[in-house]
Image (cartoon, rainbow, N blue to C red):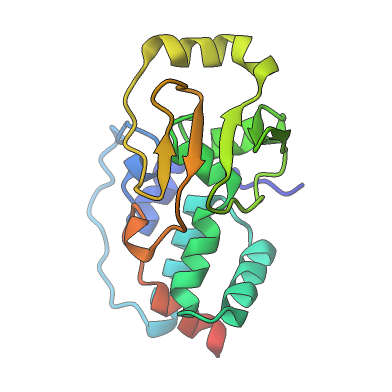
Length: 199
């Protein structure tokens, strides 16, 4: 399986993303020096937006193209449907519920079979959740040091309004609605991505 091994902070700086969006709470100590400002072409702007979204969600080109084509066949706005599909990925839901520090860590935990959806073990990070689905840490995994520490720390993570964290079960959450465009936690000109693929 292909992996994106690009350094987080360098890539965040290049794409203009806050490291907090990626779950990384540190800024680079190195002074990047003077930045050369040059006017970007329309194509460069479109490409940057696409690269930004692919980087945030950890999706490679072939899979991203498949999401776009699926979104284009849906009834609503193609750009909004594309972002909804990406938000519904299981690895993203695990991250947004605060059950992993980053989306990359969430993807690894899902791959290793630590999560269930409606009581059934799912180890596919791209699995698309739907309203009513309950995402939880698998019973066997709850005794691991990582999840025990998470319960002990009891740190508050503000989940988006389309997700509901169980108050009496810290390792569990429910999908209560479909994610909307305003639930995205970073700025993206999704219309530029649609324009890029529409050519």
